[in-house]
Every structure is written in C-alpha cells, then in structure tokens.
Image (cartoon, rainbow, N blue to C red; front, top):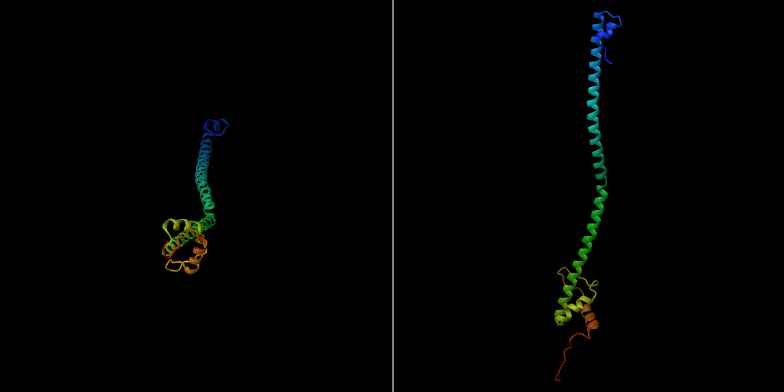
Length: 157
C-alpha cells in the first residue's frame, strides 16, 4: 500500500510535511525494491549454481567407480588374453605335432584326424616352436594309432 499526498494531507498533515513523508516513503520503497531485486538475482544465481553442483555431484558419483570399473575390465581383458594365449599355444602344439607326424611318414589324411583327436595339452614347445621330448611322443603315437598307421613290409608278396 503506497502513500500518496492526498491521503497524507487528508489525515491533517500540512502539505510540506506530507511531501517530506511521501519523499521518505518513496525512498524506502525504492530501497526495498532494489533490495528485493538484488535478492531475486542472487536467488537465480544460487539456483543456477545449485543445479550445476547437482550435475557435478552426479558426475563425481559416476567417476568414483572408475577404479572398480577399470579393475573389472582389466580382469576380463586378462582372462580373455589368457584364453587366447592358450588357444594360440594349443594351435602351435597341434601344428608341431602334425609336422612330427609328416616326418614320421604318416599319410596326410590321417594327420588331421590324429591331430584332432589326440590331446596335445601335455606337450611342451621349445623356443623354436618344436616339440620337446619327441621320442616319447613318437612312441605314444605308434602305440595309440598303430592300427591306422602304414607299415613297411619287407620282401615280396
């Protein structure tokens, strides 16, 4: 509710005093309006900062788990790498085993079948990629597959 000159003079206040009261009243209203505007601007700035803070807190929460996520991904990668290394090693062992069978004179059709069915996990490879302990492997090959391996016959019929 604003005071105006008529209302003040209507209360019996002289015009000069009414003008002074009105001027003071207008100053107070202007100061209060400026203060309210300042408070509104501060509120808007604070509100924007609060929203930014909430957004940053959410980002921080996501980032807090980086170590756990990293370790989980690294463990999965290490497992995959180990599995792939095992597959590659087994493939190299099978190829070395096939080369040994070729050197023994086993026919090509049998080489793939024997290599597919024999367990090569116990075989060891040297630095050059050749099988170690080839004498034992040859003996085992002859013992296990002797019925399918060609034999050399001496003599005529």
